[in-house]
Length: 383
Image 1 (spheres, helix red, strand yellow):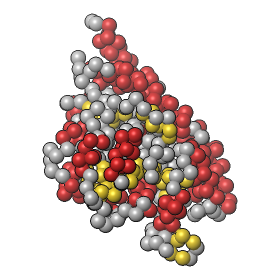
Image 2 (tube, helix red, strand yellow; image 1 turned 45 degrees about the vertical axis):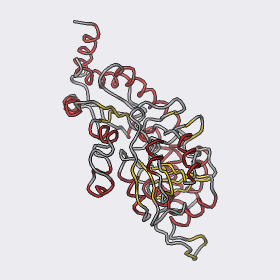
Image 3 (cartoon, helix red, strand yellow; image 1 turned 90 degrees about the horizontal axis):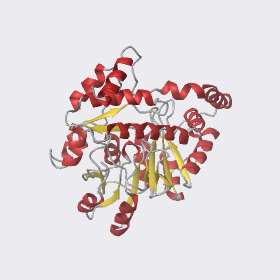
Image 4 (tube, helix red, strand yellow; image 1 turned 120 degrees about the horizontal axis):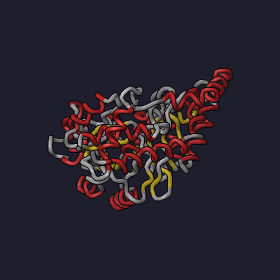
């Protein structure tokens, strides 16, 4: 038996009776921080400062500094962050916002919620991210903003997109729901556009113990409008100058997030180690992966692979008790709610990606032996 096949066979035999490999293990992240998190939450409870309290202000200050930006405004979810960011930027009925088809539905939901029209542009076949050339072809007199998605924690080409936005006099906004701590050309995501939206859903690289989100910006006026919009449109107490909503990040979640923020860079380093092992082991096979641009420093919220026989891949992972996911199996225009945004075949790159991908286990604490076992299972299909 060839040595490579023998290694694969030996690994599979050794793992036959071991526990399953989870797709995500939040206990591994939360357990070591339990005492510190409990203490932070106790302080909020003892103060009875649950809404817009000191813990929120402290986290907002810390997260803005982490993102190398001037302002961070905590809100109730990543979807809320996207919507309020756009509303604060003046986007509404009659406007168009250009984004991508291979994203979570929230990106487009948030555009629609402002009253604006989502416009889809296909993605680059190498990076799987927003293609500036495809965007330029979609710019019209109604275009108000370009909204790239740093999908899977891999930064988009912000230089090209900034240039495009400046040339056409439109806003550049960012969906960084999966990109906490990522960098483009040395600068943190969150400091390279008009404003940037983050999600703190529990499974994110920086996740709360509930839901949450934030808008990060260097524009003090936009930050002030987001602060007002999240709190019933109050620019000052008891004066409702804008039509707002209840969209605040509560203080208990802010306290948890500030504890976790101190560990984010270490966790992201762990994710990069895992991603590097996947890339090394799967190189030369039929498994395709998005290729980050040289200026990008990804944080690998997800590690997603493309395979022409993806259902066989899913079956093999399931049989080996390896957790996996689908992010996202249908392009936005293939969802019934947004079928009016495009016809089947209109965005061939995005559609091909969505139809042939599977998300592999990815978290900072995942040991490399487990990564090797996942790769052995995957590569067995290639033999």
